[in-house]
Length: 161
Image 1 (cartoon, rainbow, N blue to C red):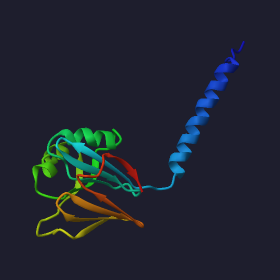
Image 2 (cartoon, rainbow, N blue to C red):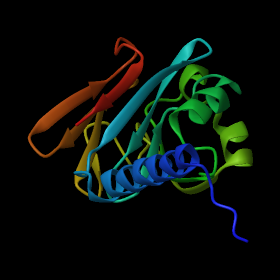
Image 3 (spheres, helix red, strand yellow):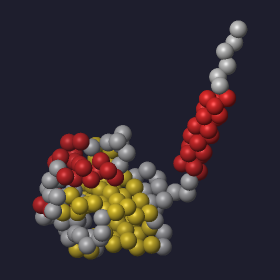
């Protein structure tokens, strides 16, 4: 003798599978976007840029280990790689958290603006995005036809381009 699930259970299982299927298709076929998460880290600020190609760039690290909390909210829990870290100046408010970030995340490259190798005014390309730092703590992100300025006066939040 076979036991059947009640009709209510069957309908619930179908609804859950349908919702999961729609969620996966939305994630796979969504238009690629670039997101910028600006956060306060201690008495400094930082920005996490996630490009459509999969690059993740951290702009400044904040003054201390509070950068890890900001990274934890901006990135999925399984991501432990940063494509690059961009340091826009030499003050502790911009670079103090570098060591702790490097101890928890693998980092592709570190670029310090204001040095002889990368003077202010030069730019770096990451996939379709271009980053230029004109002064300490002020970075301009160019993506398609949009210019987004990241500075200490940029309100914390997540921005999509």
